[in-house]
Image 1 (cartoon, rainbow, N blue to C red):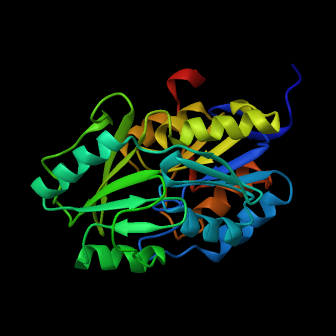
Image 2 (image 1 turned 45 degrees about the vertical axis):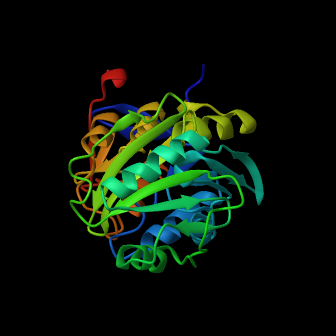
Length: 291
């Protein structure tokens, strides 16, 4: 196999020029105030002119699609991987089983948490609470009262910071057909639940297959537990020093600054544009499978 030209990294060797760049939103492209740095926006749009750019996020599909348009991405993986939209067409949509939803309703009551149910186009919070209102403002969503009429693609338990501190599942929830991952930030605690097999890595694998690409073609950016499988599978995985431990273990590179500081632009300058010179924001890591 002939190696493609790429950025030469002294610690890791040549990094192939990616044919697909995938970026997470919260904590990666966007800072805590939901801001995208102008340099990162411009760099991602430049990358989209020469390769495929995709967004992969747990955000609802309409919000994710808005940010995909902002950076010039033609592929959007939303709701934690439960739905994939490419070139405006829905590629996959995997619902959460009804028995898992019943289980989550019980957990919401016992933990005094909001239960948010997401369909492809709608958001159904369990109650009009301050946490729910803040969630709606953050994602630009209008709540729809009552049970959803369409299939639920992702469910979230949402509580104020520390509200789910005693409930930290990662992996199967209520049987093998659902998967839960907990995360927390300044906005609160989130338990994201999708159907088994509906995750960012599986969704991106389908995108790669359709486009005739493989993981050796991928440059991935992410910071959370949901991003770790993608970072581990990608030829080049870039994370941040503040990232979830699983993300840091899975990445090949780390950025010394956080989101909102032009960090993605700095990484793309080194790994895609191959700008000459030193790139002090980018530090090489040694992943087990890269040795």
